[in-house]
Structures are given as C-alpha cells and as structure tokens.
Length: 190
Length: 260
Image (cartoon, rainbow over all chains, first blue to last red; front, side, top):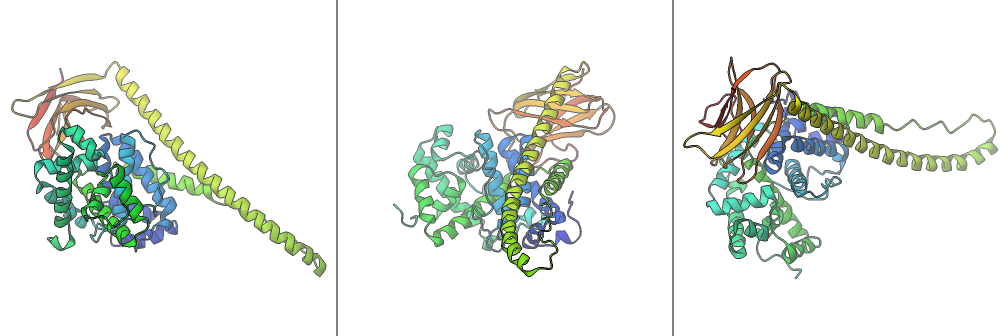
C-alpha cells in the first residue's frame, strides 16, 4: 500500500515543511505517508505494544504540525530527526519515564547525506542497513540491538549479557566503526 | 576533560545512548562549545537513526492517520484567534485624536498581550483535548478487552509448539460476533530476517492476518486486534514469515491451536 498520491509524492521534505508552516494539511498527510511506516516499525520494535506505538506516532506528527516552523530543513534530516524522537519517546515509555513531550524540533540536530524521501529510497536503505547489521559478528549485532532498541548503556548491556564491561565497550565500538564504514554514502550500491 | 573526543566513534556511541557518566557528560559539555564536534554529532545521530530501518516493517492502520487529521483540525479550530475589536471611533475633532492615539496604542499592546495569552491557553487546551482523546481511546480499548473477556461466546484456544520449530506457547481469545482477538504468548526469537505472523484460519476461505510480531527472549507478546465480524475459525496458527509478514502464510507453522 502506498497512500502517497499526486504531487506530494515528488515534493521534497523541505517543500512539504514549508507548506506545513502555512498550515497545509495535505503536506502533513504526505509526510505521514512517507515516514509513518518507518516510525511505527521502530516504535513497535521497541515497545512491542501496537497501541502505545500508534499513540506516540500520532503525537509525533501532531508535534510536527504544531512546531514545523522550528525545523530548518536545509540544516537537518527530517526523517532522521523523526526517528531520533520516536526512539527517545519509546525508550522513555519503556523505562516508564515521562516522555519528552515538549522536545523541540531544533533541540537535537540530526543530519544525513542519505535520501529517505521516496518509498524506493527507503526500501534501498532498509536493505543496506539490514545488510550492514547482518555483516556484524553475532555478539556485536546483539550489543547494537540492545543499545538501540532497548536503550541500554554499556554497563546495562554488560549486566544483561553477563559479559565484562570492557568486552561490551570494545564490541560496541567496533560495531559502530563497521556500521559507519558500511553506511557511508560512497558505499551505496545505487 | 573538555577537549575534542579522541575517537570519532564516540559520537556514534553517544548517539546510540551507550555512553554514561563522565564519558557522556564530556561529549555533552564539549559539543555545547565546539561547532565542528556538534556537526560530527549531528552526522552520527543521522547514521544511528538509520538503525530504525532494521525494525521489521509494520504499516499503520488507516485509523491512525484519520485520528491525526481530526486532531489537527480540532486544534486549529480551538486555536483560531478571535478578531480584534475595532478600536477607532468616528470623530471629527483633531484634539480627540490626540487623546485616542496613545490610548489606542495602549489598547493595541494590551490586546496583543491578551491575544498571546489567549493563544497560549488555546495551545494548552489543544494539548488537553489531545490527551483527553487518547484517554477516551484507552478507556474504549479497556471496555473492549473487558467485553471480550466476559462475553459468554468468547473462545480461548491454546496454541502448541510444533516439532522442530522454535519453542513457545500462546493462547488466543476470540469472539466472532465482536470480531475481536487477543493474543498472549511467549516464543523463542525468530531467525534473522524473519518475523512471526498470527493467522486466523477460518472454517471457510483463506487465512486472515491477525498480526505480525517479533519475539524477544523472556518477554511475552500481547496485543488485541479487530478483525471482520462473524468469521468462524477452525484454528489459529503462528507461522514464520519473511520480515514484515506476508499477505498469506508461506512459512512453516510454529504454533498451532485447533478450535474444538
């Protein structure tokens, strides 16, 4: 299912944000169609609760609607920012912290040279990210997933897995080095 | 220590949330005053954000978008500022203007302050409205769960593991008249690149998707789903499918429970 229709499919995020600032509901709908699947997927993966994930998803787009003027599309990646906010809120909820409901758009800078704007680009990225993760040794991949999807720190991962803290630190450092190398735009297959 | 991080990966580890204590504070205090490192951190945040794509793909129900669009319309209606009253009155006398202009200016300032306050209150109202909608939805969901559990025609089906498949157990509560299904189970994690998918196998016709899920060791999965009403099942089954699920089952059965 691809609900994107008409000119919204081809509009850039920056153009849609501009229209959002002018209170154009169709622009919000287009951004929702573009990124809601990605965000809901990560929310459900973290929370394992579809209803809670959908609540946060709705709240994130409502916040985007209210505070779009704070987002400088020329300086940041909207999907990157949305993914960071979604993950933070889900982990806060998982840990029963109050979600950062007032987290401003400008509060956390997120840039990415990669294009997320079309469904095809997202599909390609999905393949690259999965490929990059699968190329990691099992222990490194597990450590990355515990940190990203469960919000665990070095010492929390060490407690969870029973591995020495130094081993966990080395695993994660090596894993992010490898991911960085494999996710560079120059290593793109397209 | 407030110098540049010695290793570039520190930015990625910070974005990942793995750093803690002094290591975390050192990055935070340094990027607050170093534009170059702040840029590197933003790039690391963008890289780590890509891990969102590693989650099994789930598309939202159309109702979520509909609720969002209703929410923004409700917020727009409650936030619309009232038209400012006309402050000038007809007068032919210049001296009268000399009095009215400063008074009008003061009124304009007061009106602006009031309008700002009004807008702030409207935003609070919109947030409360949104929260109320969410609570109403939660209440509705709780009522539906209670209705499902207490209905005399709700069936409970135990799903048993199949030989050679990941170990687990689950049960499904289902009410055909209400079209409501509740799943509760625990199962070993699926192999990489695979998801579990629950199916309602009707007495007649093709299996119906009742939820794609991932399993984490030691943690149960639990959800409720609305399905078309009036479907009589002959069984429920969990199959192993490509990540994100399939329109119809293609993989092996992992848990199966027949309706007695």
